[in-house]
Length: 291
Ligand code: URA
Image (cartoon, rainbow, N blue to C red):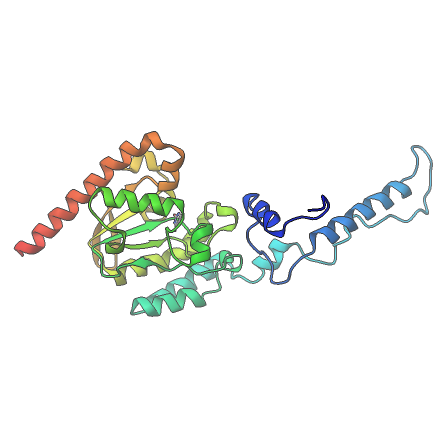
């Protein structure tokens, strides 16, 4: 290959590894052209800059922003969302109006009030058995989840599957969703406002799926569902109660598998919490059998 040629696949791989893996606007933006224009404008400014202490009052100023006609990208996108309070109110109304999981999915897919929707490829609703006794709620989809449209399918999902298997539970036997159904750009943590906007949907989701027990996977999930500022390290392993509709559900805060991939020496803590979940599930089964 001639040294000036490049393999498009290698370039795409580089973009992907560098985090350039999502389109943020409806129309493609030619960043090379943008860069060229900026460089030209900078060069013009240098040429036109008056020498020190030399008065040149009539020299026109070069434009400082060649792209000034374009509103910034974030502004373009937030303009399409509702103010947060209206978005929460609308999410509540839509969630309340859904009387089945399918209706809820349609409502979430049609909701325009969260800016994350405009940068995500998919609305990631749920995976697994909607009739399961155990429901897991993570934070938000990542890159793989956004591509496949399913929660917890990337590396942290694979670890989650192994964690469940370690207490004798198959992934297909639980129901899995997230606080936020759209991937935040660059996999950042959803902001408190984004989580609050999506909260009515996940609460209704829990109500309609009606599991016996919840696993809150990771600190962001716990903070949002418990409306608490406590850190995951102080919450994990301690049963909490979620009031969902007219039911009080036991909910276990657990370490997030993405955290465990980065901090493997905390897997022992996660294992203890999983054992508590297994024990509680057994108790519920026994109680149901004797009822
Ligand atoms: N992390 C989450 O919290 N949820 C997913 O679906 C994937 C990664």
